[in-house]
Image 1 (cartoon, rainbow, N blue to C red):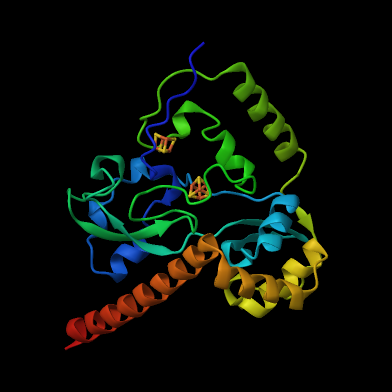
Image 2 (cartoon, helix red, strand yellow):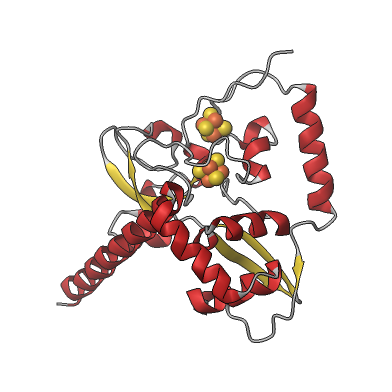
Length: 247
Ligand code: SF4
Ligand code: SF4
């Protein structure tokens, strides 16, 4: 049986471009083919994966995804980025982009948006979900994957499903008063400290040290700087749009 053949296009590491963003940057929402929008890059994290990332100094790569009745789920963060359709094939996306254009979108913090590649590919701390991806052929958004699942891969997927269905991603913790939209780096560090048992000051030191020495950590920092820059531009544009439409 031949193994799966992934085209390595990197589309599964990006997120669909939410219509709210498109409105903000003045792109007509009719341009989105909603039938092709899939939330395919939610990389959920098991508690041991969160700990491994924190120990590497990559705590900024972790995002609180949801809170419900005393349970939390975390995932990899996907900051805003410029998706360059010189590299990405616009036909793989649910929008009317053309070759050579650049669009604002969301992309996993570990993705190199200039090449579409994963900067932690082959790293032992890359989340398990990315290792077994796609769990179904249909989960490859542009349907560019070919070949068949090996028995080893099928077994790994079954094993992952069993742990997922047993609630492996759920972290039990008091969540009263916690607002996901108002999380600061400080409160996130405290949360991660409770989950991993690593002192909050040590988490900060690990992060600072990684930013100085580790190219992957610097990649994370650069992605956040780029997001901040893009947010600033989008806010400015939204303000201008408001004034132009009003007067
Ligand atoms: S799984 Fe599909 S979308 Fe992801 S890199 Fe491979 S071919 Fe591209
Ligand atoms: S960790 Fe790598 S493979 Fe996984 S979503 Fe992020 S960029 Fe893609």
